[in-house]
Length: 441
Image (cartoon, rainbow, N blue to C red; front, side, top):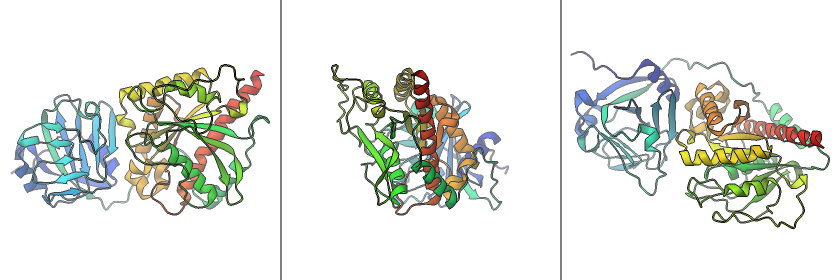
């Protein structure tokens, strides 16, 4: 009998293998040949190790998911740190992590992810999506165009290749040495803002809920304290953990000497109107009117006292930073993208320089997860940087990939170097703003 032919093009195969690392794909199951019923799927796919599901629909979407845990019909909720969903729509691939807890239900039915996305649902050539309140929803329109009829469904065994992994030429140069970390820390400690009237640069952090704004401050604070800290409240709640405007001066070590910058944290942006940070509040924050610990009201923006004097340059914002989760950028909703566009327009009108901190880079690429030093050798991270640049509207050179401290108990050299490099670029950007203010006087 002739081998069953794969529907996957060589171009798409290479992209999927780039996400998975140095692997080979072996076709186990093809629904049009073996049947769309769950029993046929399990007969060929159970106990095969890591697998990749690839589905196709009549709109031309190629989409599916990866799981590193065997199918075994155990009836258990599967925890899988490496599970993800993907989609090819046109030339822009979409790839995002799913919750490692309840990554899928290992039952006797067809393959599913997070008990939300079901393939070959009820033994039919269809995909079925149902929202569950304990899992963050994803955008089915972007994943498969809301076209539920499948033209094909394939499952591949994922085999690790024995060949040595190829590393691309770095697309940014960076030194990963203890000496470099010390030099970056010294540069930041000794930084003098461009104007004598400004003793500390104020950097405003803006972004969707759960992107890692508070965690970014905690990570920077950890480096200068010499151990992992959690001063700012952070987490992964469904609504913004930060409800107040907070100004966080970063202090150096046990001596607690203030460093020449302040990180300003805001309530998270949400796509719904009347929820999250109100865009009108951003103008008040940038112009220095909003006091520290002011509690945001999503339904009523801050009202500055019209009788008060204009805030000093010291109290104004000198650089704005969008904090974006790399694992979610591809599925950012249109409404959230519109909010970011409105924020950008407002900051542009105030002539505030803008940058992006792209968090959770280790969760988007297995090469980077294995070794953070591979970040600027990863073509996938480069592609995500370009995507963030396009969606947020800042130059590629202003997108700074980092890994915040989240589960670590001790500091890590390469993590520190990425974070410190980001602060260095923010200080330079703020200097450009202050230099422009000097020229306008």
